Length: 65
Image 1: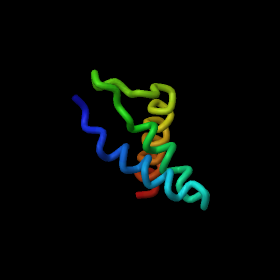
Image 2: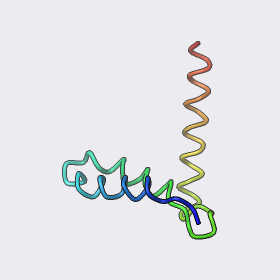
Image 3: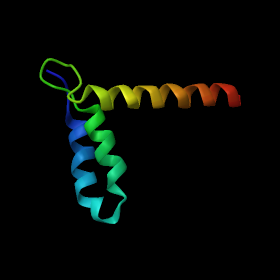
Image 4: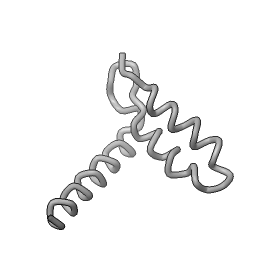
């Protein structure tokens, strides 16, 4: 059983702050991190795009150093 506390918290904060447009990135991040009962991503395309974004930011950090 995966731990979905973090993504659920991000979704709740995103819903509370979405009218201010601050919460939209939190909603997207929470949905990307959400896992189903068997541990697979609940939304695979969103999860893959988040992984690609993280990898690209890691490469930018390595290049900057």
